[in-house]
Length: 431
Image 1: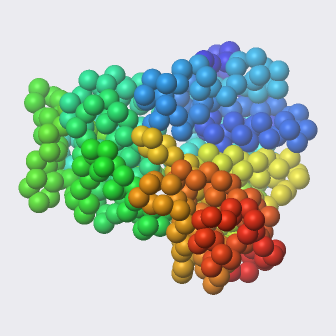
Image 2 (image 1 turned 135 degrees about the horizontal axis):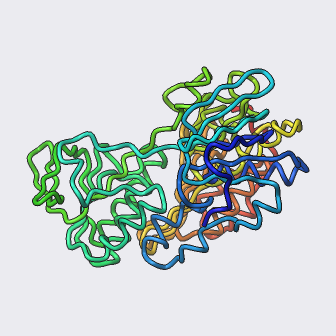
């Protein structure tokens, strides 16, 4: 689904150029219009699709439960009505700017002149740096095209190996088990979801997948993929273990796409394009948002310092801050991070950031797969992780959004709804 486009080589003049047509890009454009900004916009995406939802790709879409058309955020009429020129299937390959604007050139040779610039370039999946990585049957999941390639193979595979025990890897593993495949997850770290969740939730998730028939290998490193006739047939681990594989799915993290920021001379570190609380980059003119950007912790609780989050709510909220900056109505990006993951019949819901916690409270029944983990630092509520306990999740999310807390000793009593325990306002920037 693509909007009508001008011919390659024809110059476009758009006061605002938005590079990257993912969640952050479409959110930024939408926010500009909601703020009353009516200047022309050129939105450029290197995929042939118009902007679409990514979370269903490793969940309902991969299982065939989500139709393709409903993934798209807007139809072509919306772009025309709102004065947005959408360029799909083109990457910006060259860009330069000065104090009053600049020019970009796309892979099709199209020139785009602009006065305002936003980088919402997203991230790219890390590739697997081992022998055999060129074999057919090796997949990753980030784009609609990725999911379209993987889905039919997943439905017929007898043996699936998932490399990486992050959210995407575990969601795909659950999908493969639902299709009847024998599934092994290979994780190099000592626990799954290690960078994102508490050890309590991590241990539960591993055991829950194992109860459902998935084999999970921790502290395991892949050294080689083996194949026959150009197609993968197995995975070799560092300890010599050989795993049979008809399909291999790699989910070992993502790398922010910062090439254009480098070209512009913007401040970039390994975590992404450096921005402030208003989504401004180091030149004070360009904005950046979403998976490509790293900035101040928008939550204000827990560990201080630069933060890069990969989630739909983060991309949306930071993009709104970027739009406000471009529109001359700067508003600091300050929001409670939240996230969800569907894995088989499990729904994990998280709000806040548990990193830096010094105490946790588990309420509910872990064995019954209905519980919540509340994380605290210096007695202040930081986060909740809920499994089958949406009421707990919603109560904590709302408390955090209002700058409130819940006393740890009271939270342990699962017979008392958390919404009744929300207490005094706190300074969310003080800890």
